[in-house]
Amino acid sequence: MLSGSSGLSAGVPTEYKPVEGKLMTRWAGHIDPENVLPEYPRPQMVRSNWCNLNGLWEYAIVDKTQPMPGQFQGKILVPFAAESALSGVGKNVGEKNRLWYRRTFCVPEAWNNKTILLHFGAVDWDCDVFVNGTPLGNHQGGYDPFWYDITGALNATAQNELVVSVWDPTNKGRQPAGKQCDKPNGVWYTAVTGIWQTVWLEPVAMTYIDTMKIIPDVDNQKVTVVVEVKGEPEGLSYHADAMAPGFSASATSLKNKLVLDITDQKLWSPDSPFLYDLNVQIRQGDTVIDEVGSYFGMRKISLAKDENGIMRIMLNNQFLFQYGTLDQGWWPDGLYTAPGDGALKSDVEFLKSIGMNMLRKHAKVEPARLYYWCDTLGILVWQDMPGGDNKKLFKGRTRESAAQFEKEWKSIIRALYNHPGIVMWIPFNEGWGQYDTARIVAMTKDADPTRLVNNASGWTDKGVGDVHDIHAYPGPEMPDVEEKRAVVLGEFGGLGLPVAGHTWQKEKNWGYSTCKNNQELTAAYGELMNKLRPLIAKGLSAAVYTQTTDVESEVNGLMTYDREMIKMDADLLKNSHKRLMTVDP
Image (cartoon, rainbow, N blue to C red; front, side, top):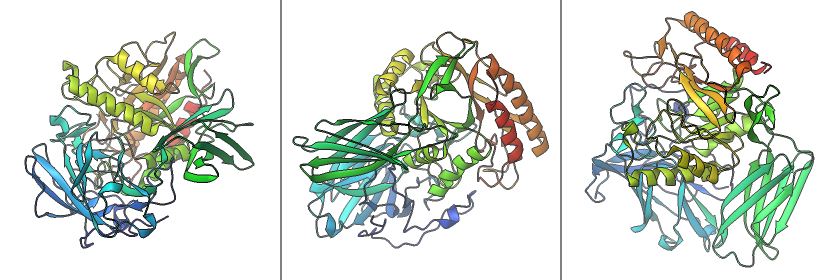
């Protein structure tokens, strides 16, 4: 594997420092501008050869009507958004301006005669990409990955210029924007503009594996792998190997659908997050044309009635009460972008350490590395679609807004499809931009029939989908038990406690209810747990506590925003949660 800087030159000096005066995490001090987020960014489709383009780029913020500036204004550390402290910029871009990026790179000589792909993990929001002045395309969508074949635009023996131009109206537009706001307040947070996930290059053959879909079948002890290729599919054969300690299975076919028998299967669950390694190849005769590494878990999520006739969410055909946090995924130093892979892992490890088995990824989509850690460590994920038209609520959508929402939602589902930890899709939250609910649920089910769909978390249930989800602050409460859907509590709690020295701002911090100290917070949380436990026997299948960490002015977190303090005793939390998991329905 090539290092992130191998064969590359940003064309700018490497001096760098974060914006001063901001709340920082402990990972920020370990950032190396020449080795930023060096982990392979797509852990379910790994190739051994790649180059990381993260690092210092040139940037400029200019009027959106103006062309690329002749002079750039400074350096920005990619992939941190311009508004973040870790970008080294810390400036609001706004809907009237456009953010320009520029860097140079050289293609390693070993990549000659290869197809070169340029990948973007995510760019918020409207993005144009140019290599050596050649426009590669436009991408609209702040949360889904995209890539271009840049082979024809490259200089094989000289430096190449990469220019990226981004416009983002944030909440002034009608595109999915999650909880971003140009004027942060309450539950609305700082805007995020531009590149916020890893940018990278990889060489592939002229015909290569473009995407894969991995479909476990627990009931029949099989896994199906569907391989899509780019290039010339004629004359190819497809091969897959599944491996685990003491186990191997293989399949070869002239068609792109491979079925492997997983005998004596080991099931994936939060208590035992067992993963099988997967290797997939396309071949011409005996020659391997392309090869990728991946993994999968034998995991089933479904609805069924328990012995008392109550409809439940079943994991691997058994009821497991799902309990976790509303997880915003924001960072005081990096905003949308965690300050390191260890930081992402740490949040998941924290939830595991206090006995939780789930998180609801709220109004945001994460880099694939986060879902990798959930898969590896054993956390169930409910995945929201980041809201659009949030401030317009019930006023409906334009045709263009609906088309963008649906295009991006389907792209997100495709990108995350193979992660065993993800068990539920949530297209709408609290009526934010909600429309055509039954059709959107059907569209989501069509895109992924293997997972549950929560038609709307809180407020505006339309009687469709797999669950009825309510919000109650502080709660807890539950909907009436239903014949065909499970009932869940999608948000509750929100107990607030500001911790001096660990807040985003010194004043005007808030919680759904505010406690005076750790003792009062612990007592209030314990009372919530005492009230929640009886609801499980009455039919509640899952509950989501608000929230993992404080976020900006919100101080509802189990941890402070900088992740330095757990506000309650971790052992007490773990014991409380263990009691929830052992309720006999």
